[in-house]
Image (cartoon, rainbow, N blue to C red):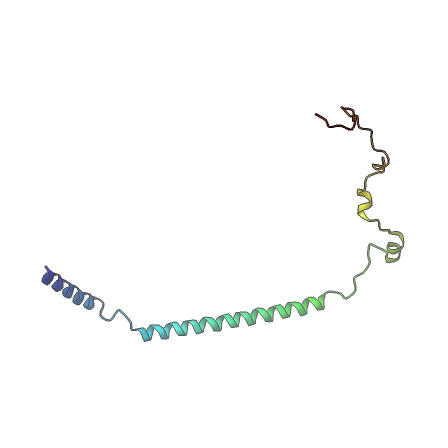
Length: 121
């Protein structure tokens, strides 16, 4: 059984080698191709980053030139606004109204038993 098995393995290996002849590339060429692909990708990434940075810089410069330095007070007079407004802490509204003094007006508790100084059973 082992002789037939060995012969079959050898025939299969030879047939596979004939079928793959010229189709499988060697390691060095695959490695060189992968290296060039990675280098190309890195260059492309750097170029896109540079273009994005330049576009952001141009946008900042244009927006700073287009926006006026002082905003006009079209709808509000600053003097009237400063003289007529007042500020009240928001917590003042949330405080409860004074209704009773809890320390001075403690209600009388009705006791169910009389205390004669002894123990309660």
